Image (cartoon, rainbow, N blue to C red):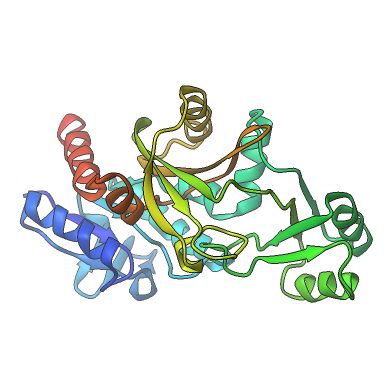
Length: 294
């Protein structure tokens, strides 16, 4: 019997759905909260309760933490110990490390010529203010965040613009600033399994919120993008060697742009938007990989 652990948030739908799919295939169930994991380099063990993760056949990472922060990277570093012990981690820890930090993801995408919103990154208040004046309206994004949490809109004509920048910088010394894009009421989550395109769902705004995230009241629906958009998303995700991911894309008047490639991918959007049981497909992929590679 293969022993495959699921790393995520116990009790959360996506995590438990993935654990259910693993249990159906293997008869084994272990949901792991990384906050409970301890590394012992003397004995080369990575323990949670009575389980040594270095003795499992594989680990599937659905969520490494509820909120992203630099400490999230430390949790991923721990998984490199399991990999060193021969445990297959899906997706590879190094691949996820490159995606948790928004700046790392952005640099990789832009070095590959992937179109993105106009972006400035700086620690300098004056340079940030110049960016806002040039963009007219800018989105200030934390380097570590999900579902638009912590993002702030700053307009060039608002009172106290520079103070708003200083307030953001207080918690975000390296400021990541993007031109605010006028979206057509939706953006896309494009789903990939081991580099294979599965389909796309749209996050559709249901309010006057500037973003379309479900966290801000959006909803999922099916969407069929042009082949050129699919090709762009494929190029973006193949830079990161992910087993499962979604690429966030917006279709604009000037062509498609990529916001980011996800470190973990969205099961809910795949299910509600396009009727795909992403968890079951992902586990089938994991089983095939383990069987093929012994």
